[in-house]
Length: 115
Image 1 (tube, rainbow, N blue to C red):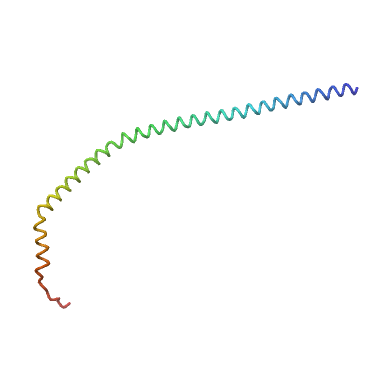
Image 2 (cartoon, rainbow, N blue to C red):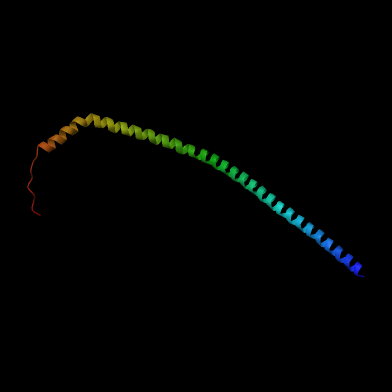
């Protein structure tokens, strides 16, 4: 009877070892699958992000075109005004200097009024 008990115990121990191996393989498979799923999700997220960035750049380039034209027009107008002011300054430069010198050298004192 002890031989039979010993054989039964040995069979149970073998079955337990085999079950432990099966559980370990299942854990390894699950861990591997989780890593694969995470990597796959990262790839999908990167592809989605890249797609949305391209869409944004396309949208931005389409809508900044009008701003660029308006900016160019504003720059042209500003340049024209600057040239006009410079021409006016050169034209009246002599008169302005004469008026300033006249104001400095021809002093007309005025008495203060009583308040």
